[in-house]
Length: 319
Image (cartoon, rainbow, N blue to C red; front, side, top):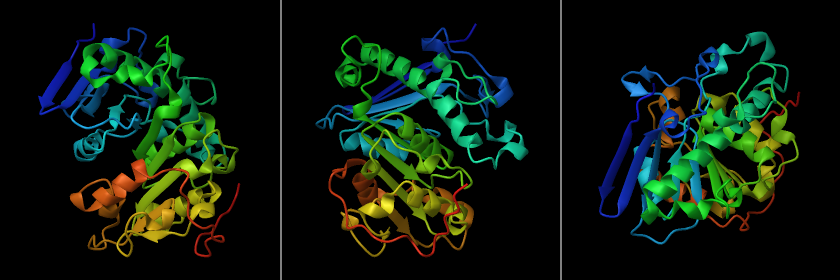
């Protein structure tokens, strides 16, 4: 029997809630073959989910679904902007379980990401049922939040019958693996916006150039230039294939200020002592990025920059 573990913290109108996915959804199952489990790791349940809302500020009527480990600093700031945020438990540890010889086929990773997001059959390499897909886990979480925290008005993100999310109000966001799955899912499901920190990756995949349910001007990216994913041309390749050059030149946040020429491609060369690992995570930590965060999550999607030519420093090799 799975124990119910629920957390609730209220601080001057800011409400943080946490609950295990297995506690609110009897259909949720573990998939240890792809490292998708409920068990404790480093004294933390793997299926613990987090949510935050600040009822003191006017709501922007947008739900951020954060696809990575819970980031309290970023989440609290986004809540202060009037955004609701959830961090659901979904399949994001499968990468090491996929045979290496399949990685470079051009479709392998993107198909697994889509199955992890939808719970629909998109890959022969995994078997993730609908109840365990990101979409269903997010729906169950918001349904639970609507009952447990009525002051947060979470029901605004559910359809009239409360049987699905209102995806046109959803912002998919994440870092690294999470940013990549966010972008892949947005190709399939139209959403309000995508915010990709340190990503998208999948440097040998073709899904980035597929037709997109989410208009290209709704994708936003931000990375450090010493991140290995940037120096190896992974991120800029994805940005090019997503069509983001149509909406403005690269904008270095150290040399410009919001609205950054209405660009969809933000970079920083902030000092990280030449440490590529530090560079990989730095853009989602620290007060210095708050202006950039606000831009990425709230800038009007119809305000776009002037189209530029293909980035000559970014090699795009399409599978």
